Structure formats: structure tokens, C-alpha cells
Amino acid sequence: MAKGGFRGMPGGNMGNLMAQAQKMQRQIELAQAEIKELRVTGTAGGGVVKATVGGDHKVYNIEIAREAIDPEDPEGLSDLIVAAVNQASEELEKVSNERMTAITGGVKMPF
Image (cartoon, rainbow, N blue to C red; front, side):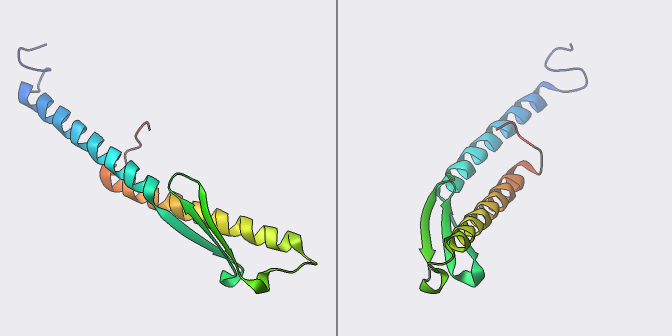
């Protein structure tokens, strides 16, 4: 190895690379903290069931309109709740991926 850096790479470039990596790491940590605080709402049945999921993947709220409650069809209500939670989870994943891609430029990071 040549003095001051890798072959063909002056020593200053390695320092730049490390500084950029540290900056990206800080940005990722900030984005992860922001994502954890997110709240995303999914709906089902034309909006008669709403589910709010947080960036920490916890369900924070379920809203059910009266017209969604049919004592003769509890499975139908159950299906609507599951659909709303799944929609919120999918939206959360989309938003999370968009924020991370904006930082990493699409490079998959091991986190």
C-alpha cells in the first residue's frame, strides 16, 4: 500500500468516505426515530373501519362505524379490522422505505 492511503486513492479520500458514512449513519438513526413516531391509518369497507398503526408496529386505534357492526356476521367485522390493519401496515412499510431510500440512495443497508 502506498503511503497515505490505498493504491490510487489519496489519504484524504478515505477520510471523506468515513465522514460521509458517519453522516449517513446519523441520518439513518434520525429517520428511524421519526419512523418510530409515525402514525398511519388504514381503512376498510369504504371507511367504516379505520385502524391506526405506529412506526413501532403497534396498533394505536381502531374505529368502527355502527353500520359495520352486524351481530349476525362477526366474521365480516373481523375481516374488515384485519384489512384495515394490514392496509395501515403496508402504508407504514411504504413510507418507511421511501424515507430510507431518500437517505441511502436505494442501497440496502444491513439494519
